[in-house]
Amino acid sequence: MAQLAANVSPAVSPAVLPALARAAVLLAAAVLTCAPAMAEGLRYRVRIDAPRPLATLLEQNLDLERFRGNARIDREQLQRMVRVAPAQIRTLVATDGYYSPEVSVRLDEAAAEPQVLIQVQPGEPVRVGDVELELQGFEPPPGQPADRRYDRDALLASWGLPRGAIFRQADWEQAKRALLRQVVQTRYPRAQLTDSQATVDPDTHLALLRVVLDSGPELHFGALRIEGLKRYPPSIVANLNQIKPGDDYSEAALQAFQGRLQDSGYFATVEVSADMSAVLGEQLAAAEATQAKAHAPANAPDAAAAPPTMPALPLLVRVTENKRKNVSAGLGYSTNTGNRASLTYDDLSIFGLRMKSALTLETKKQSAHSDFYYPVTAQGYRDSIGASFERSDILGEITSVAAISGKRAWGTPLLERSLTLEFLSETKTIANVETGSSKSLPLTYGSTWRHLDSLLFPTKGYVINAQLGGALLPILTDEAFVRGYARAVLYHPLGAHNNVILRAEGGALASREKQGVPAVYLFRAGGDQSVRGYAYQQLGIQEGTAITGGRYLATGSAEFQHWFKPAWGAAVFYDAGSAADTLKDLHPKSGYGVGGRWKSPVGPINVDLAYGHAVRKYRLHFSLGFTF
Image 1 (cartoon, rainbow, N blue to C red):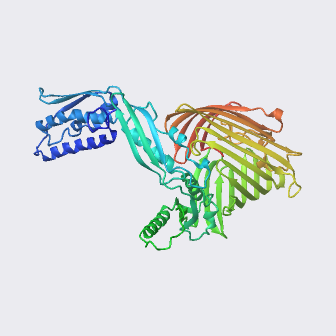
Image 2: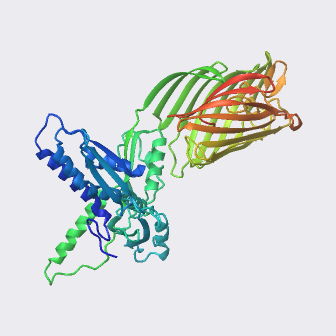
Image 3: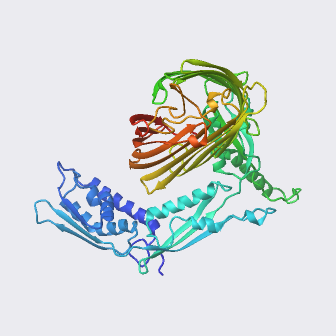
């Protein structure tokens, strides 16, 4: 195989192709600049006969196309561009993988308006042959186990231009960038490509690729540095940090830390990075010391010779604190609970706690709550205490509940867990008859598992939420009970534009008497996030003219979605379920219909028209996002 050459030769280097193209363009521009100005340039047409991708490439880059209509073009300059066009065409189509094209360029001057006729037969494309990946400096430092060796096979397996692929210049550059990007994300943030060669043989139509990657020093995280705090103690940031000094450098760890800080609510802006400048400063100082030692007198005392080690990367966090107090108001409408007006007040620093409070007035519900959140502990616990009051009037059952609660939550978005202890005092009226009051002190453990491709717009994966709790001790409790509840949603894609959503929900409550159990711990079905085609919590126990909660719950749903555009889609669905006091009375009621979907900036918006088979009525449902 011949060595690389810059023009038509047995082997051509793609590295010189962009330079040749730029030189041709500069030459044409110089010719046009030196030509005498004309009131109106020579008008001519260009007809390109080539496969569509190559025709588009030539239309966008060929001088004959780019300078058409230029006021400085005359017949002599047109002829000059026609003469150099074959070489320029070969250079351009080579960037798309065709190194042996048959090119014909002819100028037809017989007509009043000259026409340039271009024919290109690209021939067989050049494909990737062997790929040689040479790694330098990736050996584990002395004293470290051999399993710290970098996985060359995995790196080569992820190479973006595999054997047999058409060799295109853009793909070649992208593959090198992706390779380097993969390496610098962990352990070796200062890795770099020290050499890359693509040897193209037009005779065999193969490109032999060679990439040399130097790791640079292996780097580790050091101590945490925080900038920008004014009102809050450093523990607000430090307790959210899961990166320990000595851990391998990892961009994913930096991004996860930044996400936790942003989600905390304390900061308007957050920037988490490894302080490379500190390491570079120490390296320069070490280099100066080495040079001074080299120029020291021969009889100067020699320091102990030790292999140089890279200093740890300080973990730098820059924050801008949110304003301490925030008030907001809103108006809205829900097909479940009717008209809505809300007022919220947040304060980020009350006795060192974060307070969130809200007053919400809806047609069927009115509530007020105030919660105080402790800073996240070093162990990752998120503790809170709160008080609330809620009055609801749902299908003839009027309840008023005052509650005081304490909650501990921990985990990650993939597995989130919580433990909640609350005291509830409730009064209830059913069908305009007051049934008395009750109190309860339940303790509930909950877990949520998430395995989704996107938390905002999921199309693949699942979410499972399970709760188990109750009030078993005769302390501030009128009726002891045990309650279990579970809900699962499965997302499954069907091709690029379709997906299926399956949902199941179930619950059970055990107690001697139902009277005395808080209404919030009983079960109902119906509404936007339950069985569509029925009113909010319409499916339950009939008591006179009112509907109340039952001991058991079972619902299910199947939905098919088709996306006409990336943000717009339609759905058909079938829901079924009900609530009852005994399993034998648990007769599912069905609802089915069609809906529209929009991926709004704040989450998926769903508008559904559903038919409730048991009530023989149509009902419009509107919802934002999904419950979890």
